Image (tube, rainbow, N blue to C red):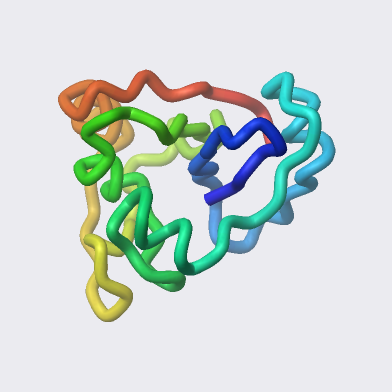
Amino acid sequence: MDDDRKGGLWLTVLREDKPLDLRLLADELGSSRLSFASAERLLEALVIKPGAVSPLAAIHDGPRRVRIVLDRELLRRTLLKFHPLVSNRTTALSPEGLLRFLAATGHTPFIVDL
């Protein structure tokens, strides 16, 4: 999860082995600067710990303070695997399933090319 200078929270989802340029992402999202959120901020905003960060944590974001960013490349895959809010488990779903889940939690993701 990323924090911006204005207090905005962004949860960016991309392949685990894909590098992320926070400056380019900030430009894409119209944010002045992004940085990785602290463990305390993750726990407060999404009720998760580092190592278990996943778009499935949107279930804990009732006020919808966290904006979800998805790398367009993910949506071209057949199956996506994420931690189900704990780091010692993995669950899989289709890209369509992820989008339906996010919609059900009230989150419309920003889909970008990272």
